[in-house]
Image 1 (tube, rainbow, N blue to C red):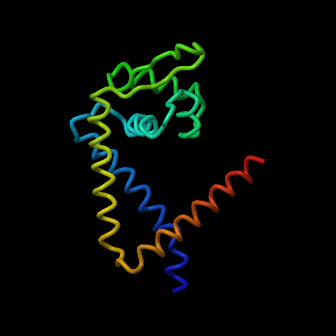
Image 2 (image 1 turned 120 degrees about the vertical axis):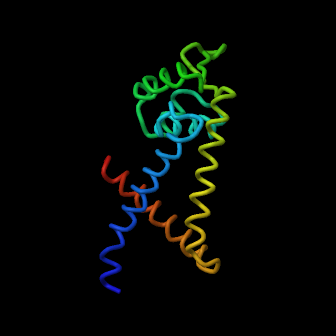
Length: 151
């Protein structure tokens, strides 16, 4: 048991890295090979915002508005997003997903469904709750650790 416990972090890291690589390949061999995984995640972040301003999306992604601006310019040029200035406050820019962007998002969401099915097939139904709760606790601890590092 001690050996498994010692190798757990390596296994989790391997799962994460491999899942990211497979996701990158999934996009690369989809109808939208021109999108990078980073760009796809920006489109996804826009889709999850009630008010998808540059600031809100940057906060969600934990990047600067400047970094987001650089990436958004490329995504807009590729036709997956548009930018709109607020009619109330011209300092505020909203991001909108185009029809093509929604199609790309469907491909991304399909990958997540397939990945979820892959994970789930290896976890017995009676242990899903435990695995989920454990991962949520680790996420909470990592968020606290992140706050501690920044203080």
